[in-house]
Image 1 (cartoon, rainbow, N blue to C red):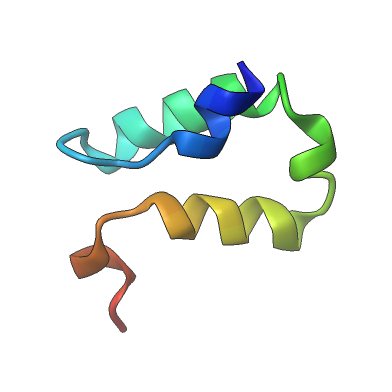
Image 2: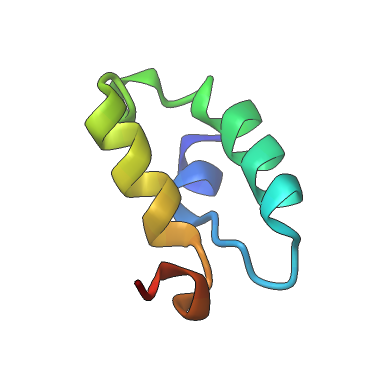
Length: 54
């Protein structure tokens, strides 16, 4: 499950669907999202490019 979490991207999912999957899979990789900063970084990294642009 940790590998699945590491490969997770939004793709064609809505942001809400991506967020739900992110939260569910993050439980299997707590060491990768142990701080708020790490959690935010990994979440934003998986969003579509168009949503990451300021």
